[in-house]
Length: 192
Length: 296
Image (cartoon, each protein chain N blue to C red):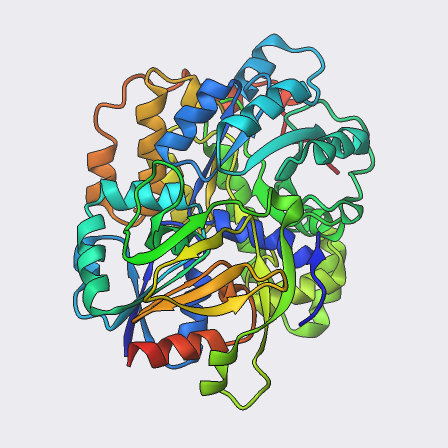
């Protein structure tokens, strides 16, 4: 299986090393032709304004939108913002997922946090109890989801932090910063 | 489900990981900060004077006015960093109280302590520190730094020192990886590096935290050079706002940091950027005026 990681900026090496551990072939995507032949794509954490600007400058916006209509894409943190259709401010977005996000919803870096969350869909890849250690860094929240969007995880206060629409996934947190490969395994299942 | 934890080392290093492949730009006004954000900066460093002016004007360089830092924090949505003097833990406490995202304990400011750096473990906010070699990098990490950058020679527009420091750090790591384990302790002694961190670095084959380049980067080619040498991202200080067309140069350096391995793209984005900052050759600077020698 050939999986791309959008390598404009951010935690793309971290995603790459987990995918390789799981046996996937990984391609770093910086230009539109890098998408050719890929089975799925991860948009990493980073700064969503930087990733959006570089995607526009190098003609990636439309190819990514086109790719997402036929393939699986998973966005973590900044990647989830980039996938959304509304982030409450003017910045380039793919608009592929029917979700509205709020950037920096928890505040600044001193408000970043780690927490164990229950993510029931992870039971499809492992018999372990579906508790996942989730890392939120200046994270966004998924404020509103459209009717075709499935909610995958919530914080104890019921705020949505992971969602799926068809073969598109969005997480406010960073599975790529942990040693736990279950979320990546789940994504590879979605790709297949 | 567990309780949430804040201010952990994982979270401190994690923010730096989100900055990888990006450009952090020095800004002295909210207007500069806006230009930097629009050009694609991953973060800005809020300060009163860029290093080239600190160098030219002399005097004691201190933490910036909190009013300026707060205004810059209000202007942009990307992370905002600010500098504290080496060893000045109260400046760091003030910056933390402002809600700054990262503190640079920086040799660019006049050191407040000529023997000790800040104990960075006791802060919730993460720190970045400068280094010239692996020993210095690991001493700073030992004190709690969650991100490392080369010192280079700030405010010169001369990339030679950043290259020297990056080569030394990365070269020391290559050397370390070839040592049998029983020789690591003597190497730790030679470098003045904490032994446990040296072992960890040997196992990882890289620093245990994110490693950026800083000090003298002035062109897209400089940024790509540092990336090809193996750093994770770049800081640009005076190089942008001391140049003829800051917005254009800033955007070009951002693109170069992403496409650092593609000479055709680098050629395209290096065209027509206007005047670069007027540089100052590091070898012409008297030794007692070198900033990189500050830090212990």
